[in-house]
Image (cartoon, protein in one colour):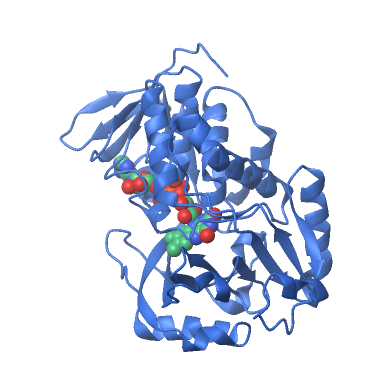
Length: 389
Ligand SMILES: Cc1cc2nc3c(=O)[nH]c(=O)nc-3n(C[C@H](O)[C@H](O)[C@H](O)COP(=O)(O)OP(=O)(O)OC[C@H]3O[C@@H](n4cnc5c(N)ncnc54)[C@H](O)[C@@H]3O)c2cc1C
């Protein structure tokens, strides 16, 4: 798609969403600059488990996820790079309470063109022969999903944007959004230089709130720390966990990392579109610059223990040093993708709430469309005004 709109757009943040926005803007022939404080995927995107699925209870989330996954699949043709797409399949198990809703969602998403099906408990042992399926009534199976490599995907989109003429400024921090008379004018970067732009797309993840506060916008965002355990399974990781596995009964998820280890974590439900309060929330973090980036031994052992009843083999595996990442949370666990009220020309993409990698490139694309005056229908539920009282 080509667009001759001469407006210069500035994108702040080269996580998956900002990289997606910059890529598509450049692809449409728009003069775009992408500013990133470190390097692409240096924030939460680079810590993502990058598990992919179109399964969501909310149709708009499914559509964004399906489009995001499609873009990841097409990255080699679009950019010459790779998204490290491992199509090992994603399986999402549900108990009796969720089964009906999950079946209906799988049916809807399948009709929208995704490879997805609802499997009954009796069919699951062919996918996870060593799993104990107690408590699982059915599962949603997406055989062509799996996981990607968040660094590769983001770097590929940034380099694709550069190839299409985008200016990429790495190691450059936006210190202030510059606004005048209710209109965005550009940004100030470290060193005090101002870069002018009529349109700014703020895709700064957990750093968004502080930038918006400076221009008098109080975004309802919080930050949570989520630890991951890594267990060693050299040469047999895929024998133990052949697919990406999300357990809506035990509230955990995991995936093989190549052939030699598994990444395991707890799950509080945001990714389905519903929240499971009973599993508790991640630790609140007030300053994204300073948090515990590792995983403590008790956190790792607790996480591993939650898997043992489902996949008993996991109990034997050695624990390796894990890592933690930050979720930029919105109050309803769904993203905010919108024009910022009261500041013409400013758009924000934030609140990805721990499930925004798979859809990130599509979110960037949709925000880019919004910024050049199109209004994608799919963004309707993600307004910032849904939180105003
Ligand atoms: C541990 C973990 C596991 C996850 N697992 C999954 C998963 O399995 N599947 C899934 O779909 N999602 C998952 N997610 C969520 C997903 O990774 C995020 O929702 C997504 O990556 C957010 O992307 P983003 O581009 O919005 O933000 P970010 O990745 O936060 O990117 C923002 C970028 O902005 C830059 N920036 C910030 N401030 C400034 C500034 N002032 N000037 C210039 N640049 C700035 C930062 O350096 C950063 O690179 C996980 C997240 C974590 C932390």
